Length: 109
Image (cartoon, rainbow, N blue to C red; front, side):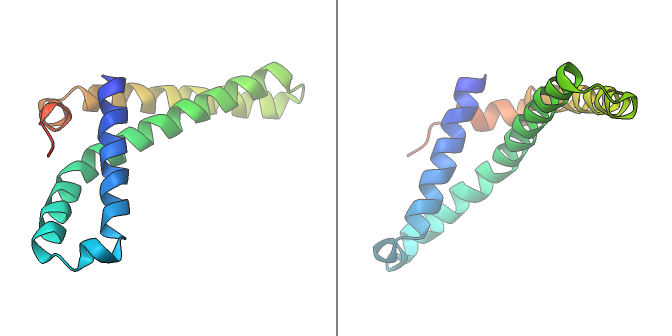
């Protein structure tokens, strides 16, 4: 799944790059086609980026738990770890929804 999501994100980034190209902007049909594809990919890319941010927040909280000695900071890190793990689980379930699978597996031109 994550390999597919990386591919979708790469395609989304490539579309953004193409839409910033002055030569592409001269072709209205191409701009419309790219804009439509970008709009179709955006919800999945946004969801995937939130998933990756939650992963990073979990890693940061774990690092804090390993290194911090202050009791209040340790408690904060534990709470943050629990909160981010719940968010990660929720996002993972959402990424497995049928609408996400359809976007991930739709052939791109």
